[in-house]
Amino acid sequence: LEIGYQKELTYKHSNGSYSAFGERDGNGNTWLTAFVTKCFGQAQKFIFIDPKNIQDALKWMAGNQLLSGCYANVGTLLHTAMKGGVDDEVSLTAYVTAALLEMGKDVDDPMVSQGLQCLKNSATSTTSLYTQALLAYIFSLAGEMDIRNILLKQLDQQAIISGESIHWSHKPTPSSNASPWSEPVALDVELTAYALLAQLTKPSLTQKEIAKATSIVAWLAKQRNAYGGFSSTQDTVVALQALAKYATTAYTPSEEINLVVKSTENFQHTFNIQSANRLVFQQKTLPDVPGMYTLEASGQGCVYVQTVLRYNILPLKNMKTFSLSVEMGKARCEQLTSPRSLSLAIHTSYVGSRSSSNMVIVEVKMLSGFSPMEGTSQLLLQQPLVKKVEFGADTLNIYLDELSKNTQTYTFTISQSVLVTNLKPATIKVYDYYLPDEQATIQYSDPCE
Image 1 (cartoon, rainbow, N blue to C red):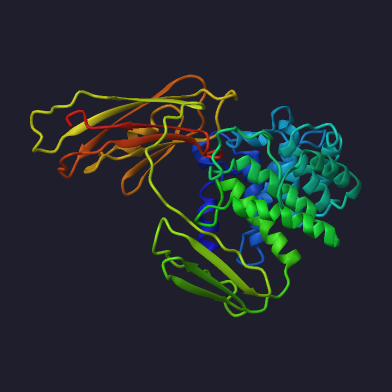
Image 2: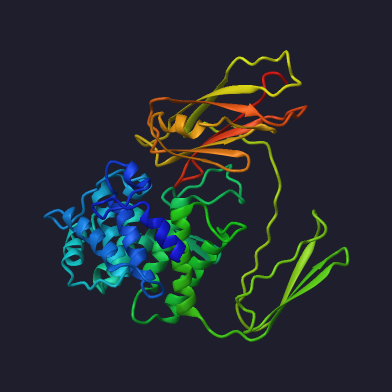
């Protein structure tokens, strides 16, 4: 927590606001400032947070509250899907007001009360499911149960019920060729999580309401990836918040539970869960894949079991939301026994349904034995829309403010430090940071191979 707090302060502007790249951005961002302020307010229970950092942020946000009580969208809102189309001002005000209430502000606080007034004017007219779910949660936090119940009824009419699970989607009809194992849409996870938070946020819950919440949790639990997160950053934050709320609301002590995993090839392993180890993560590698396995549970209580299958496939050429191409500079192939350099020019643009994307990452995997030349970060930071450059073990990540319909070109050089024969192609991927299912991937290779 303390490390996270110190890192967060590096994104602070002198006026108290925050943005994705700190002072490198021209302005702080309303949405991110509200998110940081909420986190600081909640972290105060556990670590020292300088009250001035919270007060500076609150003062900046108050200065951007309009006479209507709504909040002005200052700075670049990287997560454009949060805007909800025409409900931009409403969803932004909803998020800021929720953040203030979650950090313990009272409904009589001027920033909260004016924000609620703005939201009441739009509560019943908004058609965005995301905004409806967020508003239902806010009015639950504020104790405005009449408006909450109206919004929950509207959400119920749009709920997608499948077996014992319930969820919501901003695109209610999935594509006919969608795989049952495909990655969840980040916005659907976030939207469903807000609906769950709204369901759970009231003084007392009936058994029927807990059962409904359990059905929502059943869908959310199936969307988790192998590492415990979800599709992206923001949906993981909200989903984990909703699941934690459900855990504290519906928790009942479990007795001893045994889970026996068996295979037809005489493999057997028993997981034992009791009060002393109920929060300990247990895992076991299955020896035969493919194979037929059964899971037998005995005892009384609730446990979460997940199977993970990892495999590699060739990347699909997906150009629905981004165009992506690469040009390789002329290479000198006469002397393959000495280290060489290759120049790359990456051309990309946004071709999706919105006017522009959210924040974008261009992820360049290195050819074996190659790495970016010294000075690549400084070179790229001078190119359009580039806000940050990171280089890991074998990957160069270029962070862009956004991409529009105009094609941008990013040029840099990679040099060979280790001679490798029979080089295999490497990938270049461009994807939306907040909607990672919006992406395009291509391959590039050594022109001398």
